Length: 109
Length: 119
Image 1 (cartoon, each protein chain N blue to C red):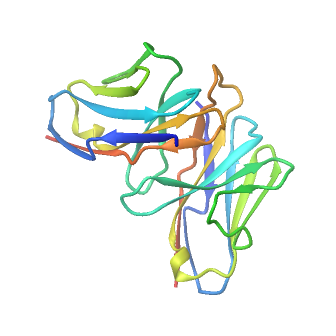
Image 2: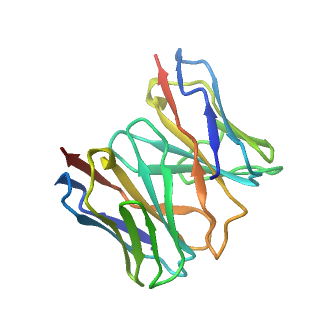
């Protein structure tokens, strides 16, 4: 069965303390791996799409990478405004997303 | 970037009444839209896939007679919660698949969500 698992469930960082969020997947025929940011009471905001192992994407303090088994979202020198829930999702070719349970990130000033 | 709107953002209705939620893709045509439900501190749960011009496909366990979906145009899908009950209270989010993206998997862009409270 296709599955996406995110870790840690929650993460508290001091401002400027870099870290990585993990998204492990067991999906046959991965067509795309997607990262989203979700603020409380809002819909997910698109961040990145990764299509193949070895691919990397960057945006400001965020960098997403992909291997054949997992994806990482690296956060460099985070700021309090980076606090949110980060979701990853996989498309196995059915065009429906398989979502992970998310990582709740809190960045302290 | 792709923009998806959702209306209303919040709605309160009485038990037994129906409520309609609209989802619009503003800057692209979406043949496929999705409806999700999200419980507090949980991830998104897919309810149904909405295809323009055809019947929606519902996920297992979702009552299609309670959650009516209509995808009447390439930019609009609606979700109607019929005979609402307090247990239907939740955060409902739609997304639209952007056909302009590719490389294999299509990107989904999400609306801001609708908070439904049934009293």
